[in-house]
Every structure is written in C-alpha cells, then in structure tokens.
Amino acid sequence: MVDFLNRNKYLIALIGVINFLLTPIHTSISDVYPAHTVVINYTIVILVSSLIASNTKTRTRSYILGFLALIFIWLEFTYPNSKTITVMRLVTSFLLFLYFCALLLKQLRMMKEIDLQFILGPILGFIYLGIIGGILFEITHFIDPSSFHLRGNYSGYIFYYFSFISITTVGYGDVTPLTPQSQAITLVMNIIGQFYLAIVIAVFVGKYINVKS
Image 1 (cartoon, rainbow, N blue to C red):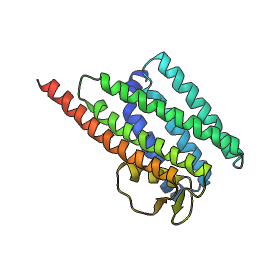
Image 2: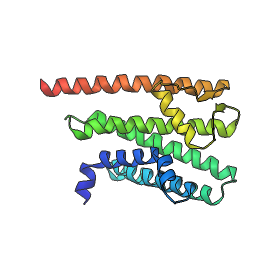
Image 3: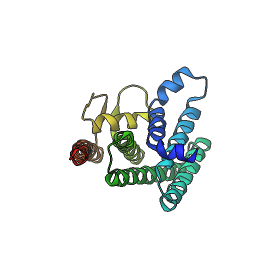
Image 4: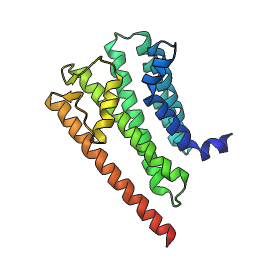
C-alpha cells in the first residue's frame, strides 16, 4: 500500500485538487449542505497533498501545517463569524500550499527521467499556484471588501476561480479588481502564471533532450 501511494502520489494529489475545483458541481448535485461539501473537499486536498512529502522531515512539516489548517477550517465552519479564526485559516492555508508548491518544484528539479510522475507534477504545481492565488485574493477581500467588483452571487469560491483565470490570462471580466492592492496582486499572478508555464516547458524540453542524448 505504501509503495502504491509513493508511485502514484502526484496522480492521487492531482485527483484531490481537481475534486476541490469541482466543488460547485458537487454542491449542485448532492443533498449535502454546501458548506459541508466545501470543508470536506478542502480536507481531502490537504490529506492527499501530504503524500508528496518524500522523507520524514518534509512529511512532518506537511502534517503539522496540514493539521493546523484543518483545525481552523473546521473551526471556521463551527464559528463562521469569528474573524480571528478566518485569519488563521487563511494564513495556515497559504503557508501550507506554498510549502506544497515549493516541495513539488524541488522534487521535479531532481527528477532525471521523464515519466508519468514528471508529467503530472507540473500540472499539480500549476493548480497549487492557482489555489495560492485564490487564498491571496480572499485575504485581500477580507481586509477590504471593496477590493473586487463581483457579478452575480458572492461565494468564497469566486476568488479561486478568479485566480485561475488570472494565471491563465483569460480575463472574462466578471470579476474586476478595483483597488490598487487587488490590481497589484492580479498583476503579479498574471506574471507568475506565464513564467511558470515558460519555465516548466523549458525544463521539460531540456530533460527530454538529455534523456535522448
């Protein structure tokens, strides 16, 4: 079982984060209360992402950060009006996914063979980047609720949606950053998203050439 998890850790983590991104679909077809679905999917993301830790040291760090994030996620569900718990949930979640992203990029840099793991890893990293951006946008909105103009009904998911359309530079216009702070973060996410794709493609091609030669 342990060997299976190690060989398929990126695939399992990728399925977990994609499941999180599909949360609105789950809430629309399930009888489960929407808040329950969000919390459960967020918990799954943290648990499966912890699999990418490759040694005792990194695994311990991911477990500690993950445990703290989960505590505040579940506490926020119990006490939704507590600003302190919301702040702690945002901070611990940001640090956790930033750590996952850094850990993943370090592992990909050390890979010498191009296999399924090497292909799935960058995809997972890109989704982590989008989640990190979503947390940053949520923090910005928490500090200043006038930071964004949102069309339609408001939900916390909108910031993750906006993060992904920002790093892919799609820009549908249904979410608009209004303050200099939100515009600055949007600009940074646009730049990081494009550089991430360029660097990953360059590394992939470089390793492919090395393997062939």
